[in-house]
Image 1 (cartoon, rainbow, N blue to C red):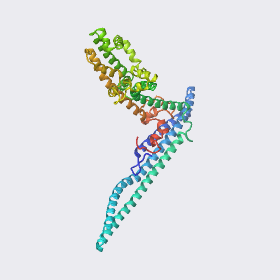
Image 2 (image 1 turned 135 degrees about the horizontal axis):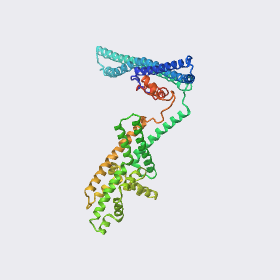
Image 3 (image 1 turned 135 degrees about the vertical axis):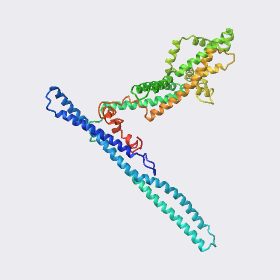
Length: 487
């Protein structure tokens, strides 16, 4: 139940009544249109054959929208009646809640006084005078009477609060029952959702759940991309979540729900979630490779192999020789491809080297005490951490281009990690809260299921839509069937 015991009741009677009037006005507008259509049907003065079809169509449409009129009329009446009942209930329960706060505070003070009076009587000396005994007993009696009187007043105030609260709940149930009559009961008049509408609702719900799963995966993938099998699944789901975010922002902009700046920000964050980490990692690998090649050029072949190893020399030269097109291609395919470090850990686990895989620095994604854990958590990028470790060595050549690449990779990694954490958390919160607002499967063609924000909504100025307002009783009465008090 949304109400808290002994506190003012939730709900705004004026707001509920205003909503009820809006639905009643819409029903009246529909009634006027029904009258106009009936006049077309009854018009026998126009004998043109083209009007025969017009009259036939007008008759069919009139019958359909007259059914919708009843739905709006019942809903408006239910809300208006409930609003009045809510006001009466609050007028009884809210003052009682206010009295209870004062009475409970006074009772606590009175009980302390009564306790002191009881102690005073108990502590009287055996040789106390009759006058002293009489005064102490009188004070004890008065204090206990004050406690008893306050307890009686509290009981009465609680009774008043319960009465108002019960009246509110009874009125809410009555309103819900009345609305359900035209939604799924005897007065539905053929306006129930079709199989297609139900399928669309199912798809919409499934989409919402899948979106939440992708948003959760986006957060978990930051920490668990190295885990065999699970890491790959999380990365794919996170990538799909970023793609969904990009599409949603474009759709919202096209529908006028957000501005151009908000759309650019949303798309930018989605693109960064997809490609940002790999792009930054590519810059880090370039900086490291350039440093290795430049340093090796100042040394003999033998000395370079001793310092870096033959494998690193070969891979660095290969990285440095990549064209811009090759680098872009590598970045674009990256959302679904794990890093070399993650693959190495997976290989260890696949070969049964679980202890090595767990302790390996490639898999240390968490903060200390794991090796390099703090840096890896802050950067969120194995390639950047690897680059930083490389540049900590002495005798490494760092020219201006290498230095700039190093700085871009380091700063970019911190920014990308922070933005991804914040963005994924925000997306997850929005999805769970139901505020994604995309509504890709929320449109229909009948008055029973289509939005009143269309032509009818423009006539009446009514926000929301028929389906949410009439069938979505929880929008009015809260998730537990009682008024939540928020509109």
